[in-house]
Image (cartoon, rainbow, N blue to C red; front, top):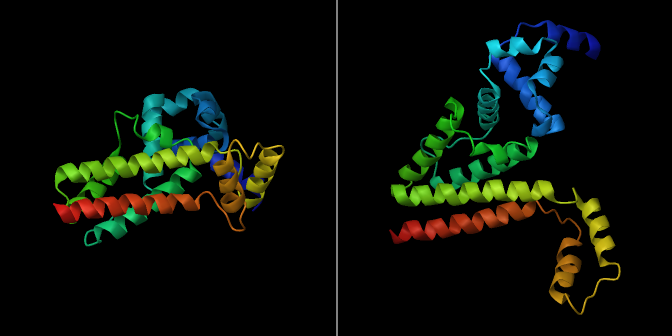
Amino acid sequence: MTEQTEAKDERRRPLSRERVLQAAVELADERGLTALSMRKLADRLGVEAMSLYHHVSNKDDMLDGMIDLVVEEIELPKPGDEWRTAMRARAVSAHDVFARHEWAASLMESRTNPGHATLRYYDAVLGCLRRGGFPMALAAHAFSALDAYIYGFGMQEISLPFDGEEEVKEVAEALLEGFPVDLYPNLYEMIVDHALQPGYNYSDEFEFGLDLILDGFERLLVAE
């Protein structure tokens, strides 16, 4: 079966809420959230725009559903998991998921009508911390700090003007042409002795910072 035939078969499939939301996620992944509209989504599905409203009430309902689909991809803590191991795995998984869906991190906390997957995600994270001995206030602090780090690092990563070791080298070498080393010696040292070293990948900084945060909460928990 050719790709063209598969595409035609896909467009003939009956509409469902899941199909509409999955197509919306794919469109946002490819073109960004600003390019997402009911008309463009309908074109992608091969239907009239009004047909979509049998499955999503409005664009807000669609965005809520899209976030729920994305959150379902994040690895959740399981009963019996040690809290630090589970929080680390959850954070790394969330970082990877938001890297695949670059539009999602900035939208995640803005929704006022979260779906089942999102609520289950929040509850599972808090439940893991509580089972690990965190008082509710400390669990809330940990959840807030970790999520701020996950979202913030992800959005910073997306905005960087390079992707991969070769592009880092190109950007750094362009920056260093005529660079006033005497004015910015520390920045120069960081670029030359760190960023331009073989194997450098900015994404590796994520897990280093994550472990610092987890170390801090481990100390706070012991002190309780």
